[in-house]
Length: 274
Image (cartoon, rainbow, N blue to C red; front, side):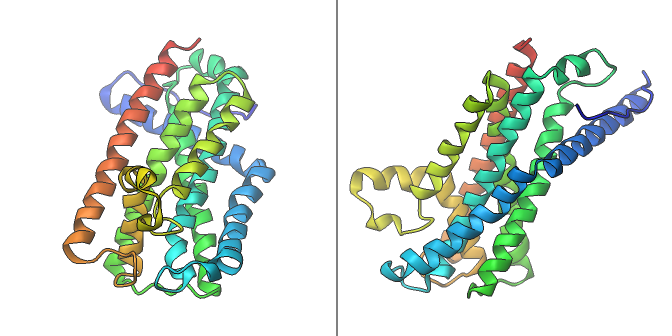
């Protein structure tokens, strides 16, 4: 169990806020240390998306007509797939804390207990942003050439951060609810499924009608198309102008809404579980 070093608490409002910030910092630092020590998880989160990127580009990409180079079309989707892999490990970390005695220990200390969950979210954001940078670097090496200006890059990063935040809170909820590591691992299959049934790898117009409706209206599709439109605007599958604005608004609404729902549900489940 990772050691915790916490400052003395104060009952004054300012002191309480400082104590809360200190708790968040301590829990986030602990979660980062746990993540770094989990070498297998780190390797999987960094290597698997790269393997998928190379496989789709060089094995399947030549057989898919998306109107542009396949690496240009598929990179935004693979970035979101990488985010899903990274978030899945968060469910395992939270489940271990819930069933391994860490939560009982924290509840016996002068610490705001839910900061354990927020710490895992912060660590997941750091890890997934690093993974995203690795995928970007490999994609650049094999031909991905974004045309975005500074505003476009900032917008794309902002949408990705919001998506990472939402999907990580969903993993936290799974970690709080389940009772075994195997059940927490099942979250991987859910997060892997959504990008495949979206515009990540092929245009939704190429899908059967019964599947196209789900692909067009699930939350991953507007996130992918927002990132694609911001980074490589003007290419096939990348919305521009008012369509891009509408897509970004929809993506942000999905991410903020899902974050609020999953965070509230995680807090409620955390309070009830003993």
